[in-house]
Length: 108
Length: 108
Image (cartoon, rainbow over all chains, first blue to last red; front, side, top):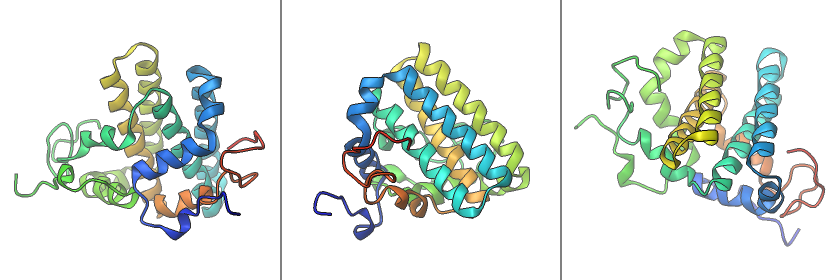
């Protein structure tokens, strides 16, 4: 087990730590597959999330949410985007009205 | 600006902090809309991400990644799931082979 990264021992995990961790597990293969193929895998996980939300157990839903998050993180990595920087869009609240809670009802 | 949560001032952000932040901005409305309607919004953002990946600027891709992450977080919140707990699935590496990097090539 020496080469395993034991994230369980160092919660709370930051968004950046998660993105780096998924890269360590999968990035070489994901980057070789390329963007379009990786997007297809991502959407397949979105479909599995839909199935879990419709008829799955809480554990199944939890796992599919993790998978979608992992593939989203991979898409960001392939494009050289930091998830942590991306979410700064929401730093001051709703990007449309800047309020917390949102007062405008606009689309996120 | 006094009521704004200035996440820009407290990086690095944890996955849990992001989930709580999105809840503060949107949860009342999202929970009233319910799961199915929220899932449709989530998928709409996935579609916008596809468009951005095909033909958008880096900034547009960055924004769509943030939006998909925000809606995924909302789906988790509606189901009472902690994103931070969900991603423990990946704590010891690939969930299938437990290696870092993945040695099995199995589906995530």
